[in-house]
Image (cartoon, rainbow, N blue to C red; front, side):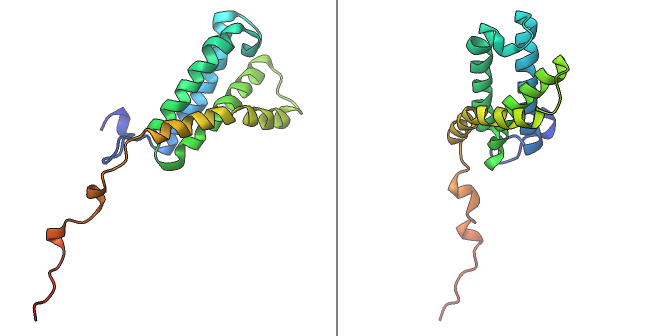
Length: 144
């Protein structure tokens, strides 16, 4: 099973709840990690954000796409909004502009959704023989 029961039987994929948590946690880790490494007030003010943080988040999105079941890879869209929310909460800047910032962050998150989609294309698909009934189990036609 692995990962606390998050894997399905046929193809190793993560459940939607796990994908959502990974997406949000990667955004939080992006903000807090770059802030801790650089000491900058906002992670995106640091060159590390652009050279280490965003490529790492992109790889995380590809991994999420690869491991997510069906359309759950769309939750990679939560990476940047969760990073921006973390930044705003940490700085005490949550206010009237928060909804507008979430719209902007969602637009900025589109490349991560594309990366997750690309990752989902590499996921192994169940073999067609696994989903079709066994021919020996089918009823035989009556002989005339």
